[in-house]
Amino acid sequence: MTTTAPTTMTMLRDSIVPFLGFFNGRIWARNADPGVANFAVGNPQEMPLAGYVEALRAQIEPLSPDWFAYKLNEPKSQATVARSLTARTGLDWEPLDVAMTNGGFAAIAVAMRAIVEPGDEVVFLSPPWFFYELLIRAAGGVPVRVTQAPPRFDLDPSAIAAAITPRTRAVLFNSPHNPSGRVYPLADLRALATRLDEAATRIGRRIYLVSDEPYNRIVFDGRDFHSPAEVYPDTITTYSYGKTLLAPGMRIGYVTVPPTMSDREAFRERVMIAQFAGGFQFPNALLQHAIEDLEKLSIDVGALEHRRDRLVGALRGLGYETTMPEGTFYVMAKSPIDDDVAFGELLAEENVLILPGTVVEVPGWFRISLTASDAMVEASLAGFERARARAGAAPG
Image: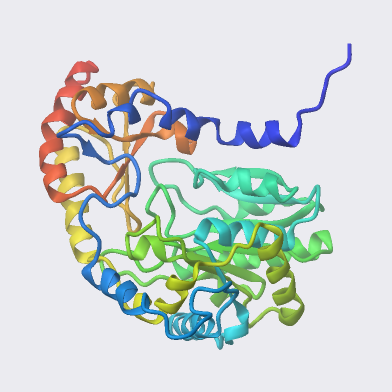
């Protein structure tokens, strides 16, 4: 009996079945209901930053006939990002190292298309962002998981090194980490860099490190964020402004060629080709005109940290096991029953929406987004308590 190999489209579809299933399921169906406390995804639940609106308004009046013409990697945008990266990392970024993209999603897609040849393996950490596997497969790559165990979600450079084979082209890395909230310290990054150097020597080919950093300005408790680019020369950094500004529908981000890369000029060309090949993956004109003002803005990270403290303390008081995120928007909590989707449906019946851990490859847990308002946090606590009781869990 012969079997038919799965098509590319089948593999792409299968990689996002849990994500699509959630948004077609019973939990998200309650999204528009009045009085719902929505912790399911990192969407804004309050009005946008006033400064964000002003930055766009200031650039909406055209100053030249080509104000809204096709825009590629605009020199002003590139210079703004290069200054920011240099200040944050101490490395000497040049504007031409920066490729502007329509969001962090596109930045990762461009990076994958620029480095992956058909059949190349890309190692990534699980739990992942929803679309890592999809983007690796879409570039012709083979996804290879390395699992991080809850509740610590520690980085294990030895496990990453063990997953590397002669076909490995890249490691896709995320810090601050969605969904765990871990912010990996410089010592961990140095250990990872050492392992990658050793593995590259062993297999006889370069291994890129794609560092996905959309939350690198959302860190708590006075922590410092460090990028792997500071310690590993072949690091490609991707970023989205949608997190720092809590405007995820306004798609602007970037992918960068590090100043430490030996063939950076050739790599710059590959990145631009990938931007075109992916369907013109450049930000729109207005966002690029506004980038200097947008770069200066941020949501109130202190308020987000306070919301984390309130929610985590309250949930632990109710008997939930939770993480204490070091950054990002997210808290992970353990479901009181094994079926996290079923428990999410119980919570939805109590007007509390969460993301089941199964969607992000952490079955038995669920993710809570801190982008919910303070009022939603307070309104949700009775629902968290009732759902836990209905699940048969002992009181906290």
